[in-house]
Image (cartoon, rainbow, N blue to C red):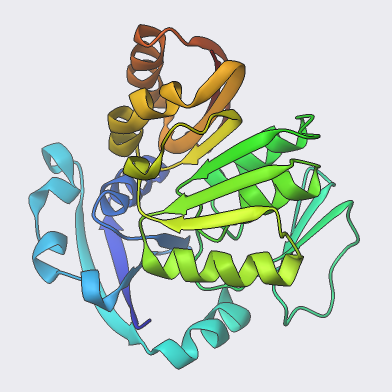
Length: 278
């Protein structure tokens, strides 16, 4: 898949303004981000790219900041090379879970070692939401549990669940590239108990789950919470991320209106992972 890299320079440049821009771009199908000292780099498939969206004032609500940008095309054949040289480094989370690419030759040892094809940043663990979710999963006893991974990205959360003893994992993503990459990663990590489906919450049926992991945008979470609740077993847990701390209250209110109980949350650079039980 061909990608566009859009490099933004923000004025005034601050952590808060960067977070706002990234959140707004994530709502517009940008699926990965990196930051340097002077810019934010956002990646999106060429098929979804629209310069009109970049020029919308909604990317800077209340005109909090201005920005300039440049666009670069990353051909499909160069995507892994770009990540290998510039972005995707072996990542050790909580001294237990190592995420690396097949091309990495130097990396620390870890209890769980996950090999990921680096075709998008979400799912490699480099984004706060993925690392938060992994930290939460590392705390769980998943032996013989049924797990649902919504918005699976690269499949890293489901793969970790499999390594921790989950008996059945269903991974779902609406993005075809994520679907295909997850299939590859399942094969690389030897997870025959994982099934991958292309689509969204409409694919959920009468099957129920002990744990649901959902690392998706705020608006999708709010929309699909009733569906998640309907397939979560009694005393089961729903762990969600992909949103900012400022969004937690709205998600908590919606979950509680469905009869779920808020347990806790973890925060990293204003991103949040929150746990609910049924």
